[in-house]
Structures are given as structure tokens and as C-alpha cells.
Length: 138
Image (cartoon, rainbow, N blue to C red; front, side, top):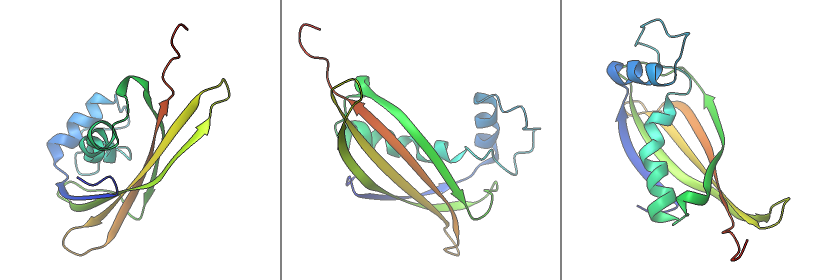
């Protein structure tokens, strides 16, 4: 997998929609597996993001936190959707932390389109932050 891009197909399955709703204690979910929660795409991208962080970018998992998550929808997901997912790293930069030490920010976007029609469905944008290693003796 390249750090710059990856592509895969994902089928939105009603059983996974149900499992996700239970896992996140989604009280608004009423057993309707036709329309997943708005945050369901995190399930779609979790394996890619983990591989990117640990294997490709070699970020230290012990010092890496999830910083931000955004979704831009053109339409809701539906059970049965087959999505063509295309991921890319859109930013990778370092800045000084307010309490000292450098922090590395990696921003990844995943665009999801209907695999059959090419219709844009949604975009997920997530940020991982790796803090500087602790200095010796501190």
C-alpha cells in the first residue's frame, strides 16, 4: 500500500450496520438496518487507517491519537451499497506543541463513490496526531 493512495470496494451489509449501532450505543437506531448511522464510514475505513498509521507511515501507536473526524455526504449510505473507496494522505506536517515538543499531523481523506454508477456518496477526513517521544530522564 502506498502512503499516498489506496483503493478498495466495500459492501454496506445490514448485519454490520446493526453491529456498529450496538457498538456505539446509538440510541436513535431502531433496528432499521437500511440506513446506517452517519458515523458508520469509520467502520469502512478503520483497517486502511490502522495500516497507514502503523505499517506505512510508521507512527508510534503509543504516541498517536485520533485528532479529528469529518464527513461530507451527498446522500445517506444504504444497506446494499457497494462503494469504491479511494484514500489518500492530503497533509503530513509537523508543528511545535504548546507545551513543547513537536507533533506530527497526518490528514487522510477517503472518497466513497457508488461502485456501479460512480456517483459521489461521501468523503471522510480524519486526522492522526503523533506526539514527540518523551525525553530521557523526564
